[in-house]
Image (tube, rainbow, N blue to C red):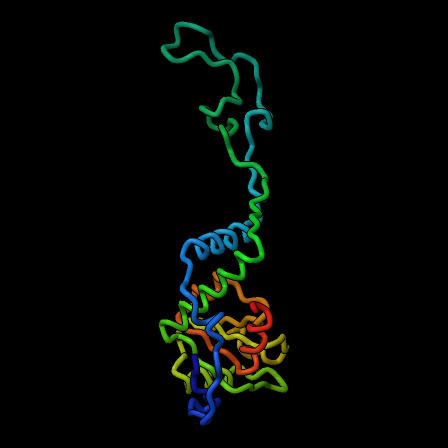
Length: 208
């Protein structure tokens, strides 16, 4: 698959970039995408939730009312979850939500997500550009020239560059990622993907 390479003004440079069919042209595997997204979301959970059960509550266990003749159920402890201030019944406790997928499954998921974007014509390629100092306004103008301003866009750079990252991190609906750190959730969660020209090679090296 070949796509035109645009410049920062949103105009064609007259050159084309080749997107490998083995990465951007496969039949998406929906079940693998489901597994990858589930793993990603599960791994984002801290698992630090906790609750105070009746064994953790500091309240009296002295029988506070007589056994019979009250018209209500028997009760002998204020730690009972039925009473205000009592412990919670079957509450959550800290746990690890981490899930793991095999490398081949993860690779197939990323290829499937990229192929799905490519099939829907949601990938734009731009020639490499950068900033010596953070320039959020200039970065935003580039997105406007490409028609991506206000569109949930995943911007993929070949490597981490601090001025580049600082320029784009505060732009609404723009998400920056390094080519080697792409994950299926980010790819599927965007409306459009903006690839810097040299990031294509990095993606190919990572997934080939």
